[in-house]
Image (cartoon, rainbow, N blue to C red; front, side, top):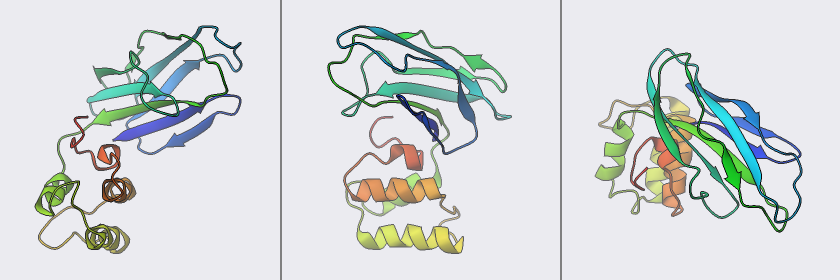
Amino acid sequence: MIDQIISLGNNKNIVTLELAGEIVDLDYPSQVEPNTPFDISYGAKNISTTSYNFFGYLEDEIDIIPGTEWQMDIDPNDTYYPFPFTHQGITEPTTLTLTLGHIEEEFEICQWIIDHGGHTNLTIQDVFEILDSYIFQQPPSGYSFIPTVQNVFGIIDYYLGFNGDAGTGCSFYGG
């Protein structure tokens, strides 16, 4: 599950999706010279009352930047500080995005996806079944879970051919 996404640049755009963790002590330059390396550092704080396995990564407009991914068990109220990442520099304006999330046990929604042909075979009817379940706060027929808004977006991502693991908590893409 994704906890927080921050777009780095002149205007910090923060999106908070869950409440298990948050990015703290974020330090990065607001402006860099072309082809000049720069550092990005931050902490990941567990703000929940449960120990979770957290993960984080930095991505550009194309993909996750190699060497920025990490995963660590963090106890409640503890903070983990990944090694600062030194970016080799950019040649044109780029939006970098910092993502923090945590891993929970496989959810019943993952089994629902498997039972409906897997993440690559979901139909528009499947999408509407999850959407209706979310709107009416009723589990899908034969299941006990009620999808969250993140689950709905994850199902839509799978349907459109994208990685919906962050929204569903599943690991169909190996995450």
